[in-house]
Image (cartoon, rainbow, N blue to C red; front, side, top):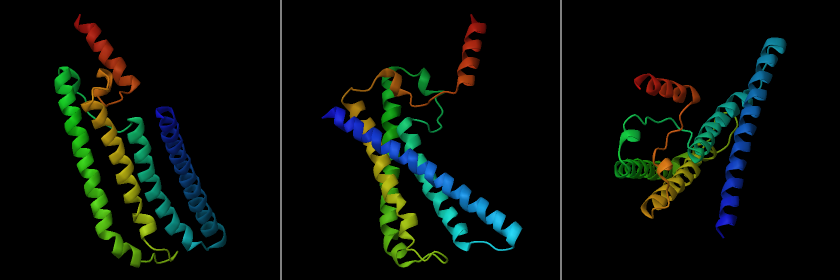
Length: 185
């Protein structure tokens, strides 16, 4: 059962990565095509301006979900990495609980604006704006599930000590820290 769930989650995030690529390619084609049309033919496609903006919104939120799943968001571990294990656990719990709270607020805000966005129509394309801002439902639920998973693993003791600091260091920073530690000894 767990194996099937892991495969499903992996497939879902691979689909999201594919959607990021599709949005990026579509944006490049629309914007570049419009530039060429304006420069060469002194005309353009107004739909491409609006749709490239919408794709950028979707790309940003979908990319945020993928980054959260991979642990790729920026963070500062200066204090946390020097704490004892219990301190790291408390900080991780507070961090995940606050993010979960923000995701609940994001979902509630999207829900509160739903009626307005359904009746609001985009000026050029003519689609309901809920197709653009409704991504808030997906993002808040997916990120909330990631937060709940980390909290569950933390509370049940299924999280390793290495996972308690949720910051991925860049190679350059790790090299600098190694050099600094070497010079102290």
